[in-house]
Length: 432
Image (cartoon, rainbow, N blue to C red):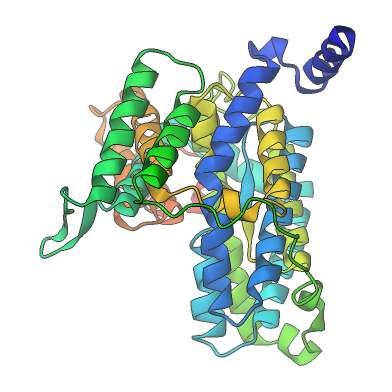
């Protein structure tokens, strides 16, 4: 038995280069579980959003879980990065509320647009166009993206927990007497103490503890059973291929594909750069060593997700939670992917993880990622202003893509206006 376990560890060490990354099997698996628990909400949220577009709830649940499994596993095996993938927030809202409910097209039309986007991304990745986009972004903006994503996911955590709410002053402090808000604050303090004491698996321990407290206190619903049959994919499977030719070659299809393409492009680039920076995966020149493999995994996941029957699959900023828990290799991503696959059969348990347990993790990951601000030279306003716009606009506009756009355009304009155009390259100008 011991010999078998040792052999398995050696295989995993060779495949994922664990020793080279100063990590081990236990740490990577714990990190993968943590990442999954911070992402598990997508299994519920994506279903609710796409159901508004008229799609079958059970089929979308299955498509979401399988697409996340494929994307995360391909990322882990191909790029060896601890970055998990799943249908993206924002993109699923555009899918349901703009394309279907707003423009009046069928959800099959929207799936077809996602499929076309995925195929285009595969071509752009093979030709290194997407990799060049990552490489041309200056280091100051990469640090700003990291900090911005940290602020963004911290804001998501604060908002989800009800600590920050809509108010007369745009945003206001929530009702701190609300038992659910108090439960979140307890979780935040518990996770903070565990991290400060360098406890391994701090995030996971905090989430399990808060989930248990919430259920015992009657604040959180208990799982409705443990094991369930996997829902059928049939109602949505391959429906992206059922769209009439006249709709595929319409101007509206071009507009929809273009929107999916660019929002996904900047979201993925921002996530990869920000999360990779957090895990010290960028090289000495600030470049992502296996950007092509990572982007290819993203493109394959989007394409397969469309065929399965779900909206655009993208890299998840919540991966930073697993990295914060020690994840450094693709074994973390593969673990997350396998848990998504298992969720098909244990849906009642996985979907019972309350927001109050995951929100503290998002907030504290934001703290960790905000440390990138110290790398920015705020004495040079041609760097400081674009960096500020990048990290400020992400939470304020509720969009990683918008933050990157504000940062890149202002960076190029300021460098040219101050006669420092030599500091920017042609690729960045074109991107701007």
